[in-house]
Length: 163
Image (cartoon, rainbow, N blue to C red; front, side, top):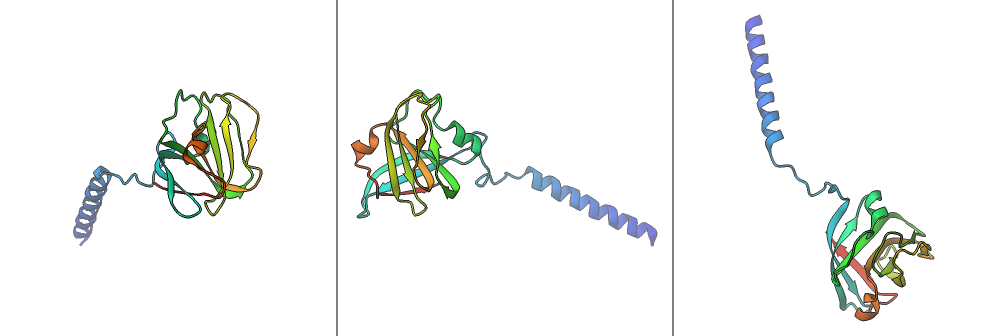
């Protein structure tokens, strides 16, 4: 009886070991994992008050504190169809600066409902003066400087995005 119990235990242990090995070798679902750079690809759209799409960007979402702090620093150029989103867990007054940022940016402040509440146009490269939202926001969108005027993006328009 003791031998049967030991043999049965060894068989169970062998089956568990094989199962663990097989599971470890399977491809892992990385859709919910944060990439090393803290940026997640996103499709971003800006809609006018009447619902017409006025701008679409292929961009990224800065999902980690490090990615939010780095933002668009050290980039030599920004494509016309690119935007970077900075989401925040709670509505808050936020400030951005342009230290180590080499291109002009339009900084678009967005409230909890997705509405644009402020646009700071053509933020000056490498300027260290704080650019404040002036009111509580949940998200900030940065695009190439001058694009908000060129594309007709205004306060009151709505921003949507999907990963």
